[in-house]
Image (cartoon, rainbow, N blue to C red; front, side, top):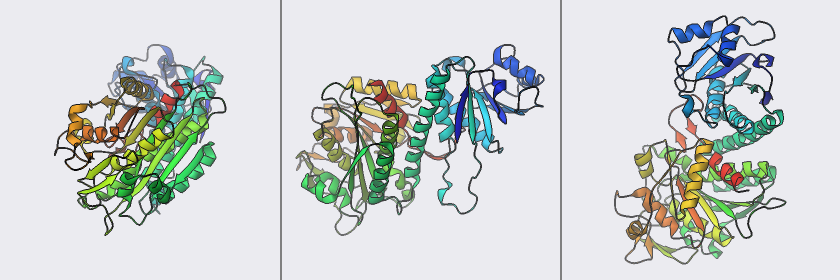
Length: 499
């Protein structure tokens, strides 16, 4: 896929189609819409006048016209973006994606987008390229027929009077981020007989080589030696050995304050049966995506390695399969985590927090002063926030605020939930230091977070529960059904703003 930018008039674009963002209730009486209306012989005015198109978010109208003069295009796609006050730079990603998917279905091979954004040229281009790249991901990797073979090969961004160098840089950055998000989505879509912990580790090693990262794989012997009894309690019932994947990005010249290190930690349960606390059979197939937190760390670290920010970043993925067998952990077992705390396991299906306990403790031992973990941790978060917002909780308000703000800039939504001593009382055990579940049906997402918090010592820490946002149940105008690569853009934004 090829991306390019032009800073001249859109008529200079040598493409099959044009796509333009249109605001709600906008008329074709001035600016670029007036120019396009003239080019199409007044069709845009007619469409708007007849109320066939009102500019609502994701509304589309395709106009065919006879090319005149320099214009090669014979199609114009109007894309509604809603109220102008709600149209952000991040919105450009969705507009570019929606245009790509709409035109791809009609076998259009090239198009130019007029984003009409007031944002900085580099940011507009980055979002546009990200949307273009991610919109072409599909779930059909394993189909032998009825595969989607249509692609838009060339994307042109038109920003008249813009900075050519800033636009070019933004497009390059956007392609890197978009490709990294698609890597995340491909991992989350893999069946568990293909993507088990060993394969996850193998792919991480290959990615690290591509992106210029250091990669270390801790096997079960090393984890046992480190005292990771919490993580190992989940792995013990599976024939697939657990792997702790450690990715390191180290800039040639760091601008980070002395001793500061951000760690991104992801839950990588490659399949979750629930263990002895077996899940119901209906819907269990969805548990292949229980490694989406780890996949987001994978994608974010890939983008970071290729974008080369000036601050170091540590990425940790706890890759484990949760299975029941004769050796599997039983409800009422007690295990000891890496930091010496004892855990009474009352439900083996509350396993994500068990692997993250040792993973965040390990991150801090490696020098992390700021930790962000992400996991498809609780069904409770889906009840609370649906698929619109990712829950964020943490022990440092500045870090939580940073994630929320970076999410807004990146086009991802976060909603803070509380934590505190009153909630921590819910995991107090009668016979061990803590237990892995709290009171039935009460504050499930918060209880999961306060459990993980027990394994953070001095580091600033935030937890992202992505169970509701890591997977789309339905196709969206800009995105296929399935994995979303949530948090990748936010994490990259956080790293770059910390330079």
